[in-house]
Structures are given as structure tokens and as C-alpha cells.
Length: 113
Length: 114
Image 1 (cartoon, rainbow over the protein chains, first blue to last red):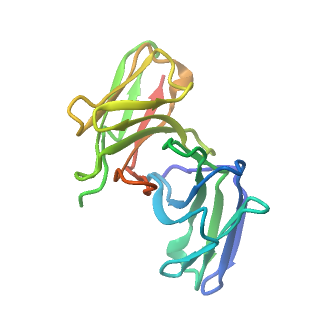
Image 2 (image 1 turned 90 degrees about the vertical axis):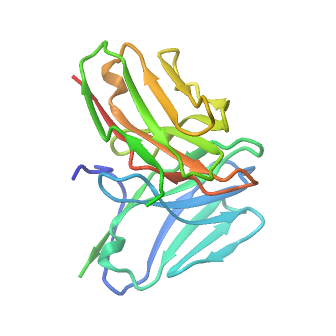
């Protein structure tokens, strides 16, 4: 399949480890944030979202943390599996009342068995 | 599977030709979005519809690009007089209408300009 990103920051972990993927966002007025997973040849797949009035949200094996003070977002994946290998993007909805998402630079996660 | 459907998956055409892509959103979703993604980059917003109304357009959407959603269901994106720089993955997404809702993406149409 084709490569989604050729020169992306890469995080390499062993199967079973916890992974933390970080993202810095640009707009202090952003009110909504989303993490997506993108596998080669496919569109971005929704993982988890968080609104700006929260600082933590948990899903199945994933946790998103939001630090508005330093405009930082992180995605934690527990017990990482080979199927988690993909490119991960954070996205922000930068303006209230508008629906445009602004995507960050992706991070490639490589999980070794 | 009732996810977002895009056709065709791949399109190869010569420079100067017109191309049209189709997107069928998730059936109960009133909002529909088009993005473009080039290799090594995240998706970039092009335009957004709520039902049949086109409410947001990016400056990336030059006058060679036109998007329609005539009945508030499927949408088409047309590129006229294609250029080499139009080569990219064109992604469609849809979402529910109320408040902040996650956008769900299709698998895109890969456009290659010869």
C-alpha cells in the first residue's frame, strides 16, 4: 500500500507497552480537539475527541489529555498492539461557529511484536 | 457497512482534463466536508456543507474547483483544467449537526495527474 507520510516523527514501541503521542496546537481559542488514526491507503479513522472544558477523557485503551495552559494535547494508548501501527493526527476546531478542522503534523507509531 | 463512501478510489488523468469525484455521507449526517491530503501531510480543509448549503470555503478552493450537494445527500467535487499540483488524496467526511461532533472520513479518491 502507499505510504501516508514519508518523513514523519516516529514512535517505536514494543507490543504491550503504553504509547504516548504528543501534539502542540496553535490556537488558544480552539474549543474542540480530535485524534485520528490513519492506516496506509485509508482515510483518517476517528479515535477520541475532547472539548476545551475538559482536561481528560478516556475511551477503550485510549486516553486524551488536554493542557490548555501550554496548548498541548496527548494521546495515550494502553497495551499497544501491532494493529495500532499507523499514523496518528491531532486536529483542532480552531473557531467557534465554524466547522473546519486544522490537522497537526502526524506521528507514525510502529509497534514491534 | 454504512460509513462514508467515495468514488472512484483512484483517478488518473492528463493535465488539463476535468475530473469529478463523488461522496456519499453517513445517511443521518447533515454535515459534509471535503479535505485534500498530500503525501506526508495532514488533511487540509477545502469546504463544508450543511444540508445543501455550502457554508465554508477555504482559499485553497480556487475557481477551478467546485463542490455541490444539490439534495443535501451525496456531494460532488469537480476540478476543471487539472494541473500537476492537483495530485493528492481527496477526502470526504460527514458528521451530525448538533454542536461539536466528530467528522467521520471516507477512504478518499487518489488523483494522479500525468
